[in-house]
Length: 264
Length: 270
Image 1 (cartoon, each protein chain N blue to C red):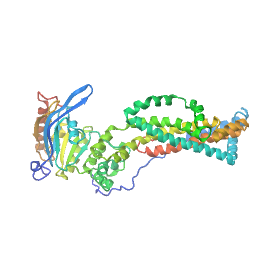
Image 2 (tube, helix red, strand yellow):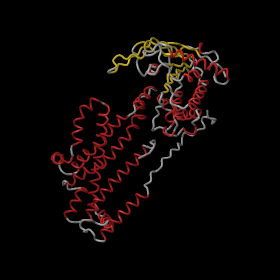
Image 3 (tube, one colour):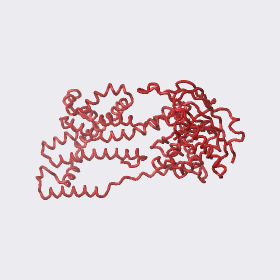
Image 4 (cartoon, one colour):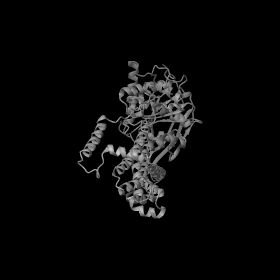
């Protein structure tokens, strides 16, 4: 039960992702100049779970898509460490309905041209408690199971940075807590993996993150950078729960302060 | 986390259980009852034998007819025209459907023609077809393909529109090679649309082929039907009609099986 996922702590790791002066505008008809990101700087180190919180529609998903290279920024840049591979866990699971759970999980590996993608995918699904559901169709899975497949698909490509776009938002509280626990277990086995978690759920952020960035209203800039260096599991005892509540309150205060938007 | 050791999972033998859709007994019963009523009406001579032939006599006439080499040649002729027109409709319809679905420019350029020809009763082209390609196989294939192409075309174009943008973004996020994107996302997404277009196209192709044959091509089952009408062989006329219906039903049924196989992942394979 170590405080950090690695012995030396995130500070000793090099940055896997560095974002410098990131500006993004969506130029759509009617929304001619629609600035979403207004000059964002951030850094994520190997082994660190960075949470990004901020008002809805505030460009958090845009930030992830920029880091993943799915869109090109209007200005500024995203620098990944050499050879670093990002992998995206989308908000909706985006499973192919015509592929079974294991075939969906293997998709990322297939994209890399990896050998024997199916057994590898089946093994990780087993680790995620889906051993009995590997050959199920997505429609036969619960939302929580679909999100596990979504997570497995991204982890299987052995990414250096995992981009989580509110993947637990649509789950009921109990399933969400189980997935949090499973995610932390998976991250313990992957001590150098950097994670960027976009979330609206301050309990989730307090429970999972090593550090939280609070974004401003649109166009988003970093308003606060709050370390949450608490040992896992964080709600094991009364003292831990008290600490957790403190961090959560602090986040809420930062998010709700005058120049920001109302918390979710 | 599961306690099962990873790696103990059997990947090779997926246990996909597609429930074979069985025909409900009540439907079978209703068909049997209808045939019995038909038979009874004819036997009781409630309707003239010239106007309606009993199913049993149609069957006898059919078997007898199939014994004739010339009849078999005409059936072969119709089947060849049917298969050729369906193949052309499938390739051409899917090709234009993809073009229209994908490219807004192509859609704008082709749409007026597609709408016009789609709305046009293709039969009015028959004299022109006869002028261009003459009587015979060519005319049958021409009209059959023209008629069957449109349901395929509209269905495929709709399929392109229904492709999930989310999945295409997913493919991009994982850096999927183009071939994999096509194989894993585009084709499986389009397949149900192609097959349902094909299913409608089948009966259209048969209609086109028969119209050409009935217009006097001198060969094929349509020609046989005209012949039997002229010689007043009403039982054989009914047998020929039954044969055409049977062929179309069989082809549609085969596509239905294909549709269910491709749609195993769907909640309720139709």
